[in-house]
Length: 112
Image (cartoon, rainbow, N blue to C red; front, side):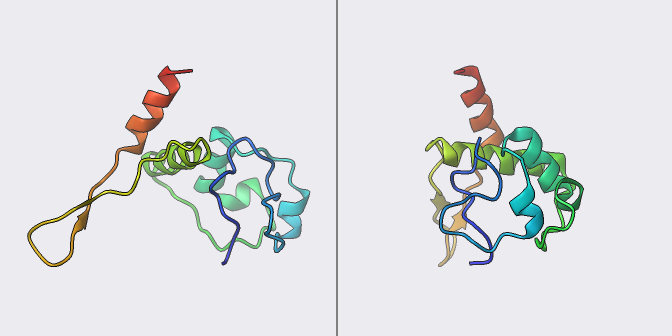
């Protein structure tokens, strides 16, 4: 494993995933709580949020892609992530069905 599981990070303090001990000093000193704003900043430009981190992740420029990742991470933490779906046909290998995570996120917001 190159990094900690992100399955239940929503609203949890950065650098504190149980069972993972190889955090950089920057992550160990961080006082961040993972939420939409902190994840958006991290996913856009990790060095701007955590200078000196040992992550090799370069960031995601596309805002829609970042928000899809954020919506997925939140839904996983809430136990609401859509199950992976595949669509069969046309060949030996099934093609994955795209899941609109932003639609899932919008639906979740209206319930709160």
